[in-house]
Every structure is written in C-alpha cells, then in structure tokens.
Amino acid sequence: MDQPEHDLRPFQSTAVQSTERRAFSVVIVGLIHVAAIYALATGLASQLVQKGLEEIKAQVVQEKPPDTPKTPPPPPPELQKPPPPFVPPPELNLQTPAPAQTITQVTTVTPPPPAAPKPVATPPPISAPASIGRAHECGSRYYPPLAVRLNHEGVTTIGFTITPAGDVTNVHVVESSGHDELDQASIPCAQRWQYKPATQNGQPVAVPWTTKVVWKLTGQ
Image 1 (tube, rainbow, N blue to C red):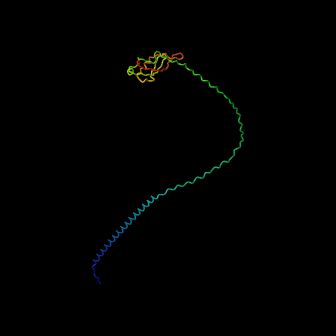
Image 2 (image 1 turned 135 degrees about the horizontal axis):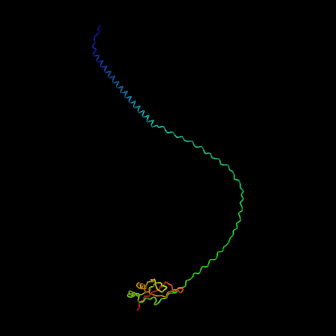
Image 3 (image 1 turned 90 degrees about the vertical axis):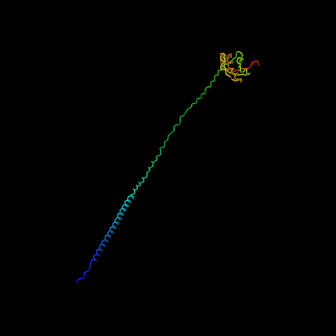
C-alpha cells in the first residue's frame, strides 16, 4: 500500500531553528563556564600571591631571637691558708749594766762688780755778753715817720745772735709791739748794735740773745 506523501518542509525548518538555538545556548553556557573558570583562577591566583606575601612578611617579622649568653659559673671559693704554727720566742736573760757614776763639778763664778760710770765733764760756764753804748734804744733816727704821725709807741721783743766779734746777726721779731712799722724798724736798728762777746774758758764764743726795743716818743 502506498503511504501518503506528507510535506516535511515545515518540520525541517523548525528543526533547523531548534538546532541553531541549541548551539547558541551551548556557546553561551560555554562562555559562562569559561568566565567562571577565569574568575576562579584569577581569585585563586591572587589569594595564593597574597598568602605568599603574608608568609614572607611573617618570616621577615618573626626573627630568630638572639641566643641568650650563658652565665659563667661562679669562681671557686678561695681557700684560706692555714696560719703558721706559733713558736714562742726564747727567753733571754739579759743583765743590765749598772750605770756609771757621774761626777759633776760645780764652779761658781762671781762676776766682777760693774765699773763705775765715768764722770761727765761739765763744760765751763759762759759769761754773759755786755752791750756797748746805749742799750736797747733806737732813738729818733730809726723812729718811723708813720708811727710819729699816728703817735704809735710800744715795745718790740727781738732775738738775734752775738758773734765772737761782738756783732749782731740773724735778727728777727719774737714778740710784736702791736704796730708793724715799729717791729720792722727794730731789725735794722739792732743790726747796728755792738756787744762785748760772751766768753767760755777765756775764749769768746757766739751765743743766742733776746732783748726788747722800747719805742717812745720824746717830749711827752
């Protein structure tokens, strides 16, 4: 019996489309698997690298502690030497010689009496000088005109030296009369005086002398 002929073209086109869809699905699934495998492989590799770095860091940080030096053993105790045996010293019986007798001679020396002091020679006395002429007066010749006008009078004490020749030197005022012009006039007046010099043991000698000059206006 002849089978009836059927038109298979619609079924063939549907099969071809189904096959293409399956192939596309297979490709998509394969790409998804490849991507997953790549992701897994990449993550695993990074984990391995990170773990390796951590192990290296741990090895660098964890250094081996230095060896603790061993404590040397204590020195052996010093052994004290035993003291030497005591040997008593031998007894010596030494006889001390008797001290020799010392003879001491005491000699008393009486010092001589002190010498009597020599008598001091007393120089012979000096005789007093004597004035020649009118003593201790200057007269109107030496009376200052200013003192005459002012009616000044007084007594001037002067000192001087009488030489062995009887002259007067080193005249100076010892006590003022109260008027300077009278005191100054006494000096040239006394320089003209003459004296019989003083003598000592018969020889004329120079002596210091003091006298007074009386200033008095005449006619009063």
